[in-house]
Image 1: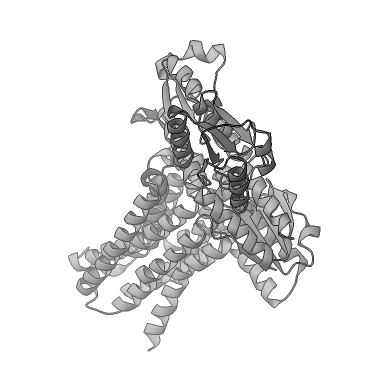
Image 2: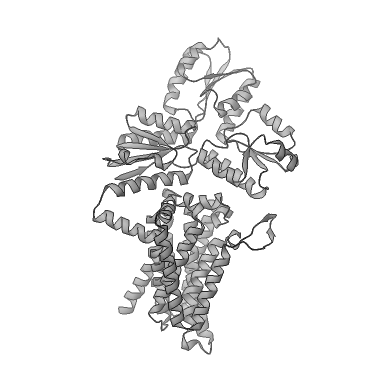
Amino acid sequence: MNIKIARHIGYCFGVRRAMDAAFQCLEHNPFGSVFSSGPLIHNRQAMELLEGRGLDLWPPNERIIKKFKPESLTVIIRAHGLSPKAEKELRAFGIKVVDATCPRVARVQQIVAEEVTAGGIIVIWGSAGHPEVEGLLGYCHGRGQVASSPYDFEKLPNFKRVLLVAQTTQDARLWPLAAEAFKKRFPFSRAINTICLATVNRQDEARRLATECDALVVVGGKDSGNTKRLYEISLNCGAEAICIEDPSEIDSQFVSGRETIGLVAGASTPQWQIRAAVQRLKALSRAKTFSPLSFIQRLSRALVLSSIYTGLGAGCLGLAWSRIAGYHQPSYFFGLFFFYVQAMHLLNGYLVRASARINDPDRADFLNKYKPYLVLSGLSSTVLALTASYLAGPKVLAIILFLSFLGLIYAVPLPLPYISGKGFSRLMDLPLSKTLSISLGWAFLLTAPVVIIEPAFFPLSPPLFAKAGYIFGAIFFNLLCRTIIMDFQEAIGDRMFGRRTPVTVLGWKGAEKLLIGCLIFWTLYLVLGGLLAFKGGPLWLIIISGPLYNAAALPRLYKNPGLGGYSFDLALDFQFILTWLLVWLWSIL
C-alpha cells in the first residue's frame, strides 16, 4: 500500500507561534502560574500535554490566586484571538499578558476595527460561536453580524455601509459564491477575502489527494474548524474519508483493499499526531501483505527498534577507525562495541519512553509489545559487553564500568544547583546534555579501550598521542552531526518534555546553522588532521563516509520534518557500516 502525505502538513505559522509562546512561558515560570484564554489551539492531545507541563485555563481557582501574586501570573491569548473587552479585563488584573493571536487573525481584527471606526457594519462569513468569530465580533463593538452561508445574507437588514470579511479557516472555494451573493444583496458594499493562505493550501491538497487516492485520512482535533473543513472537502470530492484524532481510529477494514491512501491534516495538528497516523497505516499494511520486500521491511524494523542495528553501526565504526589508525585490535573488540551500545541504546529507549510516544510511536509500541524479550536482550548484551571488556584486561574493564556508572547517574536525580532561575535535578536536564553525552560517550568508548591496550603507546609518544586525539575528535564530530540530525526528528517530544537539545534551545533555524557549521568544521578537521596524522592515507574515504553522508541526510528533514521512523534511522546509521566497507575496500586494493 502506498501512502501519499500532503505537502502542507503540521502546524501552520500562527499555531506554531502560539505553541512557541506557550513553551517559552512554561519554561520560565513556576508550575501552575501560566494560563491561556481558552484552549490555546484546537487540538485536545496537544492541550493535554501542555496541561501536563503546567498550562491551565483562565480564570484560575482561588487557591492559585492566593498562592501567586497577580504580577507573577501569565495569561496567553489563544491563537484565535480575543475581543478587546476581554483583553482589557485580563490586563486589569495586573497580570502579564502574552498575545499569541495568529498574525492572520490579527490582520482581520485590524480591518474590522478600522471599518467600524469609519462607521461601517461588519458581516463575518464564518461559524457562529467559533472563538475567532467571537473575537472579531468584539472588535465590531455591536456593529457586527455573522453569516454561516451565502443564504444568510438575505436575512440581514438594509445596511448602507457594510463590509464582508471571512473567518480565516473558511472553505476558500466557496468564497467567490459568498462574495457574489453578498454583492447581490448589498450592491455598493465591499468584500475582503481574509481566508488564510495556509488554509487554502491545505484545502487544495485535500482536493488533489482526493482524486489521486483510494481514500483519505484527515488527522486533527474533532473541534478544529479547519480540520472539519478538510473532511467535508474530501467527502464533497467523492473520496471515502475518515477524520481521526487517535491512530487507533484507523482499523484494518479501512485499509483493506486500498492501493493508495492519502493523508491530510488540519493546521492545528502536531507532527507527532501525523507521524502516529502514518505509522499506524504502515503497520496495518505490513499485517495485510507478505512478500520478500515486506519481510525485509519487517526485519529492518526489528533490527532498528531493538537497537541491534545501532550496536552493529558502533561495532563497524570502531573497527573501521582502528584499522585506519593501524591498531592491533583483537576481534572481540567488535563484540564489545556492539553489545555495549546496543544495551545502552535500548536502556535509553525505556528511560525516554514517555517522549517516545510523541517522537516515535512505532518505537514506543515496539518497546512495550516486546518488553520481556528486549529486557532480556539488553541484560544479555550487558553481560557480553562486560565479558569482552574482561577479556581485554582490567584497564578496559575499568573504562566500561566507568562509562556504565556515568550512564546510570545520567538519569538519576542528584542535588544539583539551579541554572537561570530554573531548577534541574538530573544530568539529562542540562542544556545539550543529550546531544553531547551521546557524542562523547561513543568517542570515548570507540577510542579509549583500543588505545589503552596498544603496546606502542607506552611510553606515550607525542605522534601516537596526537593520532589518538585525532581519532577521538573524528568520531565525536561524526556522532555530534548525526545526533543533531536525530534531534530534529525528536524535537517535538524533546520540547514537550523539557529536554534542551540544539533544536529546542536554538530553534529549527538556529540548530540548522549549528549543524551546517559542525559539518564544515568536521570536514576541515578531517582534512587538516588527516594530513598531519596519516599524511593522506585513507583521508578521502573518511570524508566520503562522514560529512558527505550526513549532508545527504539533510534534504530528508525538509520533506516531512518530524515524520522520521525506523527507515530514517536505518538510512542515517548506515554511514557507520559504509565507513567500515570503504576502509575494508581500501585495505584490499
